[in-house]
Amino acid sequence: TKVAILISGTGTNLQALIDHTRCGLSRGEIVLVLSNKEGVEGITRAEKAGIYTKVIPHQKFESRESFECAVTRELRSAGTDLICLAGFMRVLTGGFVSEWSGRLVNVHPSLLPMFKGIGAQRQALQAGVTVSGCTVHFVAEEVDGGAIITQESVPVLPDDTEDSLTQRIKTAEHKAYPRALEMLARGEVVLGEDGRCINSTII
Ligand code: GRF
Image (cartoon, rainbow, N blue to C red; front, side):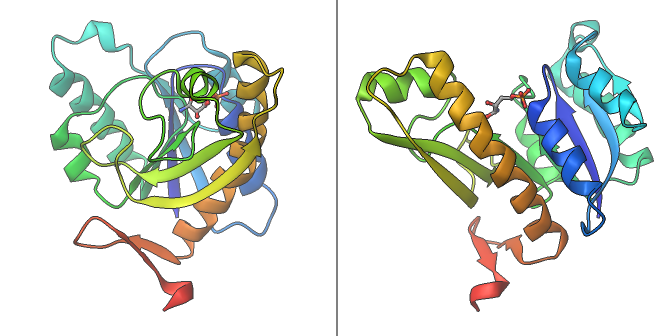
């Protein structure tokens, strides 16, 4: 399975996916790391790993559609089977989402469907939950609303700050995302016509 990873920043999830796919047992191969921001750490990580990278600054395009058209061109020429969003900070249009439906996934720092959108960790602290975590999900047009592939929980501690909770959740993401990638690459989970996951390991 040829995997493209879309990033906008630090890329610690990207690193976890690089390390995982290099372990020798993975069915996934990262063929492209694409960023909409220049000079981000994630691009350096990919270059160090010898992976093909591409920066497409979204400000240079007059519309979301024309930006996405340029992204799609790169994805296609890399032979992409699966797109993993990993801290990619652009909302994708319905057109892009439906074009890649079932082959486009994201990681979100909460146990969805709780705390959708930005500031999920802050939302968790404000709500006073004692458990939070991360979710890897198929991307649907509704932001953070797609079918859940896998989740990993972490405790929320009484003295947690947004930073400490973010770090703990990231550690969980670094386990969950490679696991999800492998489930997808092995065809163990697919997106059904009804927008829900079909998990072949439990059929
Ligand atoms: C993660 O917290 C992820 O849940 C969110 O963006 C962040 C990316 O972090 N979607 P990193 O760039 O992988 O370190």
